[in-house]
Length: 77
Image 1 (cartoon, rainbow, N blue to C red):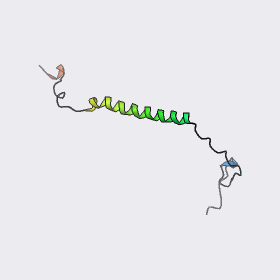
Image 2: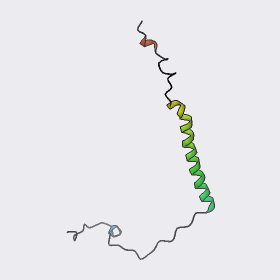
Image 3: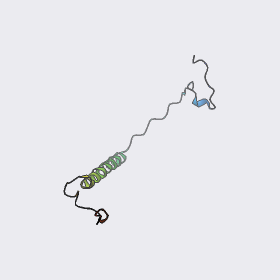
């Protein structure tokens, strides 16, 4: 059923390819890099929270502002 496989133009795309070379271990991030990532995350979260706090008055539906404004075109005098 799965005996016949399509030919691929590059041998490294085949599932049969197994490498005997192990990649080098990842370097650990330094303290400065960790602090920079943490600070960037805090700034992004603070920006999102700040935009939400500033935008909340525009999203609120107070009854005092609705119905008091109308255009002169709707008067039909």
